[in-house]
Length: 436
Image (cartoon, rainbow, N blue to C red; front, side):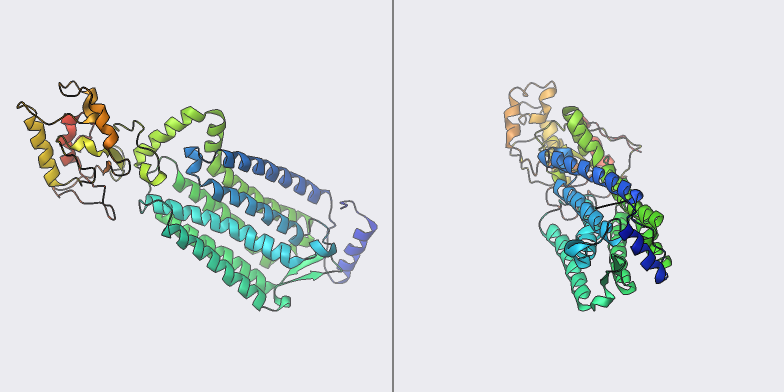
């Protein structure tokens, strides 16, 4: 494929002038764009290979590696569709002249729409974790995937229900694919709808207290995509023939792919770089952040790690959750890992603490092995009996007005206590915040 100004290209420019269209020839600017973006996507695919090979590394696993890998593939298909729709290459032959394949299926359905819904699914997954305290799996995954497929099916049905003249046509004289105004409106409406839904989800995520900056990542995603959508929509209606102008088509394609690639690396760079060059140290730091957010259950991190004690600063967000072992609030035999933290269990705990002063007190719980206590020897073996999935409760340092501890919504194995009740934990060597 030639990017020089050949006689055939000169004839194409003259034919366009006869029908009142100023057509810039396909030249070295288009070639430079193709080389730059192809190099970026080649590097991205190498990075995806690294991501898949290290998908079980917890910080990368929390980024949904298969979803983010599919996002790179969708961006590449979007790029291939743009090459044809915006005339960066000579649209000739039975393959490239198939405008439905490149411009509808590759660019829209499996390209920009797929990128949009994959980022939206990630936002919804974060919403499940941070707002609903539930892992993204089961019915939540089925619901989001079903909604994505349903919208895509409706879009495809509408596409094939419209006459071909109202969708996209190949113009042999100009060697271009021409998309109708009606179909441009349908396509842009689909993308705007997807990202408005994404923005609503991200608005619900605005107050999360995570150390991983998920809310900031999604804010950047929305800003990037709304910039692209605004620019692209304006260009489509102000200058519908912009692919005939070299400067406009190069600028639009460059912006359309530079921002999504920046967004992808903004989300993935830190975890991938740390996995490659600082694997062990970053994992320990990551686990510490996970503990401070109280998200071991949602991210399926093993509680066999020494997530022992976490200081809750009085300057921190009072709604922030941290995790403490359930064994730390009991001091009696017959410990029940499924027992909720209630007023009765507080009384039992205090009674057990008093009984230790009179001869046959309760056995030492495993977490007290570090405390100087005559009955702590050999107690670590009982720690293995704790249920890894249910042996923690969430501690929320709310300033309550003497209200009894409220049970967490939708949870059977966690409870919420306030700073006044938490003061009784001081005898268990657990650092609790002072009263505000």
